[in-house]
Figure 1 (cartoon, rainbow, N blue to C red):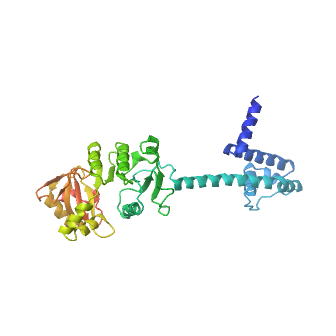
Figure 2: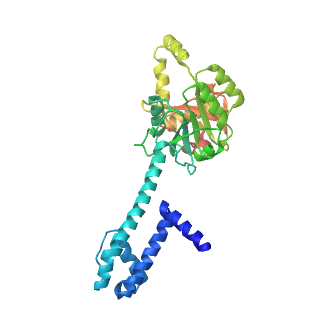
Length: 355
């Protein structure tokens, strides 16, 4: 009864050509060839097991170095009739399975079904708006002093395959439900650097923002784009730590009419490809305190950067532009600046400010 069950199990694995079945075939083939070659007097091939395994693998893979070969007539006949055809067939099956696995991995990556749970310190970009999303990701990666290492593009609906196959720093994940814990784990949401939600419409953006709120690390930053002020107000109430980008087209048009060229200064501040660009710097908690005028003077003289405002919150909801020079600035605040390049906290000699 047990033997019958074992035979059925072996038949099942062999019929499906599973890894177990293939390994059994390899073992049986090697043992039978070793025993038969030993019976016909091939001492050179069978005196050392390691040499025999090496010889059989070279033979089956069709590499054929020629340093080991049968010397007796019986050994050559057996090798020609049995060992070469069966060995090549087994190695062909092995290569077929390996190629199939590689193709499956590549296909999963292209179709967005791969597992990215091992990522850390990456930016998750949610949503696809064609050229706008492409440009946004390009601007993220152009910063040579960026604080993240990769970009993971997540899209629930629109994309059939990876749109950035030529960029090794961008991954693609198709997400069916952002509220699913297994999907959140697959994109390593709990280990991300930040999240950008730029979905097709405000309803999707609002739903996704609520789904991931509280699931990202405390040090991460979530940024969303909303056009409808009603969604923006509601999201501010439920998720006060999320930074909301609103559609400011009307404001920019009105400002450009009153102050010609103002739209170009704003475009320059947010686009690192044009010139000096805006950046935000967190003041370390142990940096002490100093006056805004001293800070502004130090940044301009030492780093050729202009401090334009300060904020108590990471999302900048209370940003104070152009404060008076006597304003007290201290550790834990955020500086809004314009500079030639991104300035990091370790670049600043905080103890020298005011001296």
